[in-house]
Image: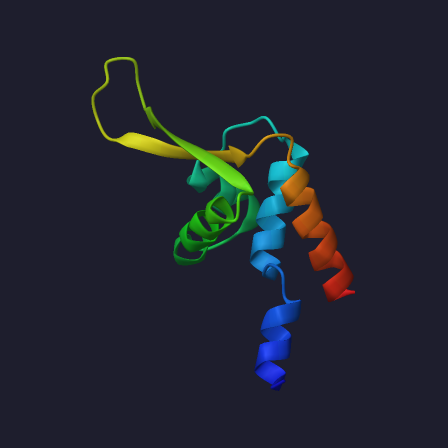
Length: 101
């Protein structure tokens, strides 16, 4: 097995994704707006949005669209939170911690 394949096989989530998951686990029932996640973690927009999409595809997150005000004008916002009780998130984080040492 090549070095690259071994690395890809061992690596569960990136350090940036682990940072996001830790934050989400701190308030598992909260719906987070991506800008809040960027502010809290320092993640760049170009990094954060693909991570959120990937974590949602892995079953870690769920998302919803919400209007920003009661008059329903302006664009809807995308919000994210942990799926269910966050067990998948905890499992991924535990695997990341064992991998990163």
